[in-house]
Image (cartoon, rainbow, N blue to C red; front, side, top):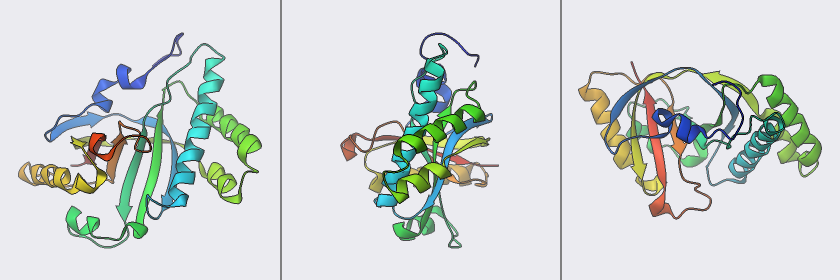
Length: 213
């Protein structure tokens, strides 16, 4: 996407990325740029909450930089990659691992015209403004990175409802993967179409995506 006037909303400009059916489906994705922050532990932990807060502070800083140039955009949806250290044979084995042992990488996709230099500027601005708030906040802001990721060929499905019910949707995804003769190749990917901090669990909408070959 080229730099443009007006406000870019990726959820509307790239519907293939931000929509999914209520049944397993295939798609192929090119490389995209993201803000990223890697962590460990329960998604109910203070560590996880501070990480999300730090990600958004940098994301809104980038938005502010580009707004001044006439290339404003809506800060995209939060996303997350999830995995475990334990050797598992299936997704059900992974789900049985205690939440305190989960690894995650938070992601916020960036418009194509956003540069690593702009992300670094926004991070430094956030550190100057919020870095003295706490040691945890300073540490997390330092860890926010600008990365490229290409998932390629994937299977995905829309999950509606609480996160606790995700295994039901994941079972459909992985049954489809087996039926098609595919093999999972990357990390479990979630795109949070709803703000889970403000949305009732039964109203949540989450894309569950799995890279395969």
